[in-house]
Amino acid sequence: MRDVISALVGKSVRQVARLRGGGSALPGLVVEKMDPGFLGRVLGRLPYGVVAVSGTNGKTTTTKMIVEMLEAEGLRVFTNRTGSNFSRGVVAAAVAEGSLRGRLDADIAVLELDEAHAMFFIDRVPPRFTLLLNVLRDQLDRFGEIDTTAKLLQRIADATTEGLVVNREDRLIRTIGDLTRARTAAVDVREFGLSADLLATFPSDDDFHAGSVSAVAGGVAVADADVTLIELGDHEAVFRVEGSDYRTPLKLEGLYNTFNAAAALAVVRQILVAGPLPGREARVTVTPDTAEIVAALAQVRPAFGRGEQLELDGQPLELVLVKNPAGFRLGLASFAADGVAAMIAINDQYADGRDMSWLWDVDFTSLQSGGVDTVSGTRAWDMALRLEHDEVPVVAVEENLGRALTEFRARTMGQPRRIYCTYTAMLELRRALAEVTDVEDIW
Image (tube, rainbow, N blue to C red; front, side, top):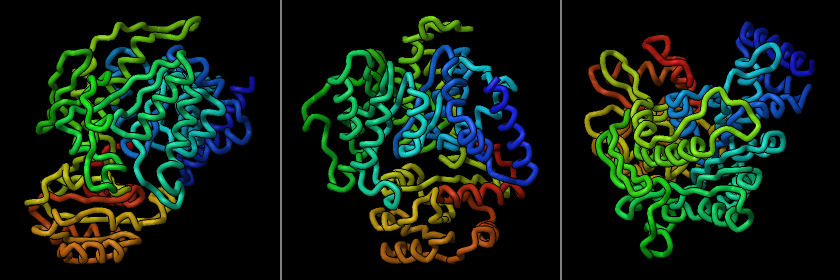
């Protein structure tokens, strides 16, 4: 009966919020306050349990990859598709997709979790599987230095009951895997990683600030990870799994998305090998087939704003989310600057991080030849100053994102366009773009 009451209240709040144009997380906030145990009960019935995805960069796209690969294998997946990765966002998604009895029509939950707010989630719902992607210097006003973020991710790993996948090339994440192995044999710890040839392409935060890239284990040759990215091409990659190489085309954009695809492969294989929980009736049991899983990966498109490509005035327009030095660096490296009109939109709302000093740790010299047409957002002048320091020419600075987009569009007719933007700037730009072109619903 309690589930029925909570679901009914949540759905009612959701309807009122939608009529008033309110936020998607409001029903979750109400239900969480009224019934703190709701989420644990709802997700506790799923036969394959809960998968948590966390880390600094890549959570949204990697979660999308995992979801779509599992769905291709026939599993019904519950996930926080709006990208709201606080616990109230997950509750809101459960309310929206659940029945009036508080039941989800799903076999498994795959959830993107904010590093800090995951603490509230794991107290209510211990994940069966966890994927930890990376620790990068991000949102200094929230987390301080990276050791703080690592401690939060360690707590998620400690709460995990059966399977953990970690990034072998990130020192702090690799240490979490090692500590988990030492702590318990009950958790299957797996790794995703890079071939030695690709290490320099994907620096960790340590490497980024040291100015050089060091190989795992101090340069000593190491065995392949459970899934190893060994080759990169133009929308193509080769992954090594259990000694076999799988070459596949990719619809994903950006270098980091390709590396995170290795993470997604490792997690999906771990889930399918484990199968449903003992004593839970499963609608479907899947025999893992790596070739099938890789084929499903080839069909995954970028999540919104993560190398997302729209069409505007008959030309491509790419939206590239940036939120920390390494992420911006890889964004610049992932897309050729020549022949593309560029705009940079930097906001400093809570979801972006208030402290934008990290912009000074990014090398923008690759933009020197083509310049930047427009700089916008609440921190537009900070961004413009940073570009001036790297001798990158800027045509216009306009803090108002709506006006900036209109002027950018008018000045760059007939050209491909690319916008590098922080999270809230991306959301505002997508709303404005939806009025003039086709924009997919937020995944």
